[in-house]
Length: 217
Image 1 (cartoon, rainbow, N blue to C red):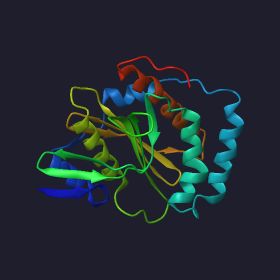
Image 2 (cartoon, helix red, strand yellow):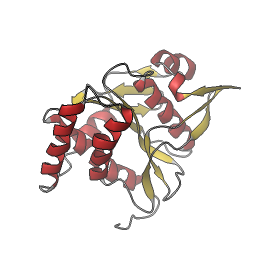
Image 3 (tube, rainbow, N blue to C red):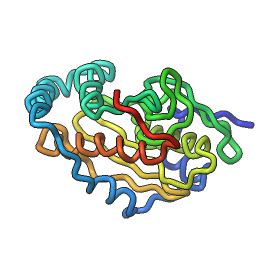
């Protein structure tokens, strides 16, 4: 059986090899981005501070610098961590999807488990710098989401994801064999608040799927 790594995928591959079809409206995507999560007043100065760092450096940072200085702090503000689920980075995930073994290390994922990821729920991300990204970030994110879908046996919920290209954030829903990708949200504009709200919204979405209540950290 052929093994395919996430970084080998193109959107043509995910469509043809895995039977996916892009649509331009999915209710789950609209519902996710419409959740009006509150942003603490104390968070706003820090959010604007890292936005200014992004504005200064977006065309020079490599992937690691973009993640260290902007993406990581933004995800920390979303508080996607507990003893029942966590935000993991660069952890190998593998599953048989159709006639292929699909594998790779997504830059980030929210999965059940405390110290080790167990079952991915949502939010696979691929971070790319502004210039000359290596590979197709949308296809790589969808590859990770396909693995998450395969590992979520018994769950019929959509998979949630996003990918980042420099200043621009794109949100994805994979529902069955259909997927939709949002327009770009620029982190250099007031849309940075929309980006943070979308990340914060993952917390109640994930917690609603957990079999036991989540205790406060």
